[in-house]
Amino acid sequence: MDNVIEKKCIFIGGTGRCGTNITRKILDRHSQIASFPFEYRFIINPDGIIDFYNSFSTTWSPYMADITIKRLYEFLLNLTMMRDDKENYNDWELAKWFSNYVNNVEELIADLNSFK
Image (cartoon, rainbow, N blue to C red; front, side):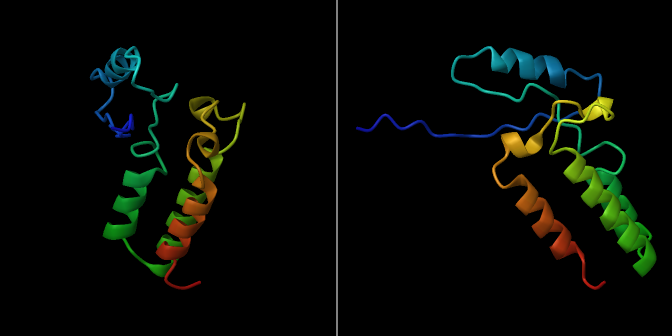
């Protein structure tokens, strides 16, 4: 029998101030669990995924779609590098944690653009 470790992902989400950070820290103390050293809020933060979805689906127009996609693209790319001027996302460097992060962002934006 091979000693193969099956990798599984758990995403912890919440509304803020509800215990997600402490839950991550408790789980991270286990020797067979790894976690990111930061709380990834790109889903709920302004210009993040939920903001994009709400703007894109409820008030669609060619002009607003273009602006919304550009804002999402800039937001996601800003999470790839060390930036002292972005205090909320300092040290995230998602490209370091997720292989092909930038390529996946590029592919997502290309899929969202139906025309230019």
